[in-house]
Structure formats: C-alpha cells, structure tokens
Length: 503
Image 1 (cartoon, rainbow, N blue to C red):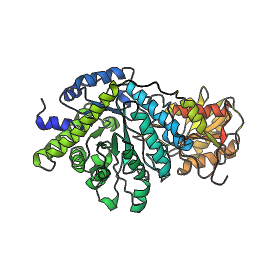
Image 2 (cartoon, rainbow, N blue to C red):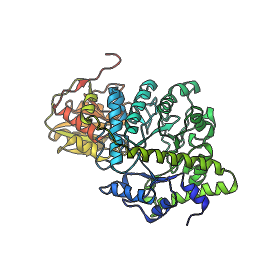
Image 3 (cartoon, rainbow, N blue to C red):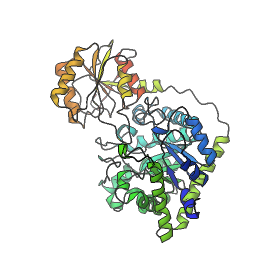
C-alpha cells in the first residue's frame, strides 16, 4: 500500500511500460492515483482499446498519452508506417485547413485507441538543417509559418476531445545534437532565440493548448540547467498567463538520466515548475533493459520525489499544485468526451501528400518497376523512420537492398549499385540527409555516373544543393509518403516541379 507522500507523487507521474497488457504493478499504482501512462510502440496491438479500458477502469481519471505526430513519427502504426501527413509536408503545402483536418484525424485515431493526449504538434522551428531529432517533424524553419500550422493542428486535435501537447519548449530546432544521447546547448543570440523559437509556443498558449512539453536543452543565457529543470525557463510560460499542464520530455533520456538521474531529475523538474513527469520508454536501453525496467524506472522517479518532499528540497504545495493541474485536465477531457461531436469533413491523407510531392531536376520517365537501395541513416530513439516499411512501400514487389553508407566501404557500396542497376526496374536511391550527410551525397553522385537512369527519393528535408539525378522530394519517412513517391515514379500522377528561390 502506498503511503501518503507516494500517493501524492503518483499524481504527477506518467510512466511507460512493457507489453500489450497492463502489468499488475501498474494497475495497483493506477488505483492509488497514478496520473496515467504513455504508450510506446511495444504497447500497440489489436487489443489497444481493451488495454486503455483496463487502465481507465483502474483509474477513470488517467491521462493516456501517445506520440502520434504523423509523418515520420507514429506509435499507432509503428509496425507499418504512418498513413497521416507529417508536419514538414503540411508546412510545405501551407494549407491551414489541411493541417487542422490532419490534427483532427490524429485525435480521432488516438481517441479510438482509448487514449486522450496527443504528444504533438511539434512547435520547434527547425533552423539547423543538421538537426538529428527534429528535421521533418517541424512544420518548417520560419516562425510565422510554424506558428500558424501549430495553432491549426491544435484546433483540430482539441476539437475532437483530445488534449494537444506542443513540444519541445523553449525550442529544439537550432541544435545538431540529440538530447536522447547528450545535453544540447544552444548559443544563439538571445534576442533571436526569443523572436524565432519562442513564437510558436506563444501562439500555442494564446490558442489555449492543453499541455506543453519541455526540452532537455541548455540556453546559457537562461542558466546552466536544461529547460526541463530550469525554473526561469518554465516560469516564462506562467508569465505568459499559461495555466495548463507542463509535461517533461522523457526523464530517462541521457540529458537527465546521466546527469542528475531519474529520481533527482523528477524532483528538480517539479521544483522548476513542471506538472506531469514523462518517465520514458523502458525499451530504450535495448538489450541492457531489465525485465522489470518499467517498474524500476517508475519507482526511481517516485522515490526521488518522496525523498525531496521529506528533506524539504521540494515543497508539498508545489506537488499539490502540479497534481491539481493534471487532475483538472482529466476532468476537462472527460467532460469533452461526453459531448456529442459533429461529423467531421472528409479527410484524404493521400491527396494532401500527393499535393506536396515535388520533383527536383528533370522529371524522370515513368518506370514499370522499382529497385530500391535504402541508404538512409539509422533510426533514433525518437524516430523509428529507418524502419523497413518505407523502402518496402516504395519498392513494392521489386528488389530492395539496405545499405548503411556510414559503415559500408565505398567498394561494397559500388558493388550494390552495380547489382541493383543490373536488376529489373529503375534504380531508386532512398535517402534522408542529402545536404548534411556527405556519404549519402557521394553515393548519389557515383550512382549518376554508373546508372544515369537512376532516380532519388528524398524523405528528409528538401534538398538545398541540387543532386545530379532527378529527385522526388517527399519530406516524411512514412508509408504514405513512400506510396505517393512510388505512384509518382510509376507515372500514376504528374508530379509537380519543385520551385526554388532561383526559379
């Protein structure tokens, strides 16, 4: 039986867990006031609505969150790839109705699974093309464009009785490091940072967003602590008049776990002004994950809070305030879910993405079959977009080869190029970082010499420096994006020429 302080701490904790059924320890904690859970790919299966029902049976006020951004990031379709447009695609299209309808579709899918919090949209302004963790997850690199699409997406999500959570405050767009593995530091001029990177979050607050997720980044002008643990940074949201829920990014990420630890991070985040602590995905340690990693991580976070409450470094009033905000959001969502919802407009995800797909360079002749070399970077902890579903959807029944250009000698790469060129069909080089990964660009350049009829499909940020082969620009590593690229290459629709600043 949890004691009084443990129960208080439960009200601000949001763990992940193993499996497609709620483990007994989790059900016990939910009955003792645990705020809810976050779903990850390992939790998703045919029985997901039943899992949600079991969680809500244990705690009817549970918040159930899921990273469902569309495009390159999905949990509901983690095995097969997203069939919803991604943020970069929507930003390139710049159609606010499409963004609002996409938000509504994400919310409908999440609600059908029994969850009630979408961990999105991404409000980061991706001003560093080297960014390894944001990239096409952002609507773009212009704060005005990002702001309007963030607001449209929030409106779509929250009109469907689901909470939206913009991320990653105060802005993760100008970094070339991944906070899952390190602690990024942003040294931009402070005036520029405030003008560019804070603007979409201000717009989200003004639009009534239900939740804001923090970033594990350091802005030295605001102190040495990462934003998640920094009262000055989180205090900005309250200074803007925001009284919604501040949610931490996962505390099991290296930026927190390997500095102050899970328990210390949990207590410091609460003291800094966070309200709901996302503990993280217990599968992240990979083979090093313990059989009870989920429960151990949860208890480490809770023990850290309880210890801080007992030694006075964390005030009870602060935790009660945080738990109150979490509870208020649960009440709001239950009331919204009980209301009747008007039928929504038709949502044609394929048509939205078809409107975005462009060709850079001369349009290729229609192909009859595609042979795909998948030369994308490896997946990250946040984005499992290097999954085989992208290449599979692109290749169809054609040949498909995986080529890790970061670790494969050039001689072996050239052997694969020659092998695929000799196979039936048009050679397709599937890449995602043509402007920042020299090995990917080199592969394309060598392919152009060996196989002039080859084409490129780029699922990353659109190319800035032209490639020597026709390039289909998709802007999302998703099943839907790959399907539309395939349709374009087979001549099923006429892909539009990409306009550049020079033309």
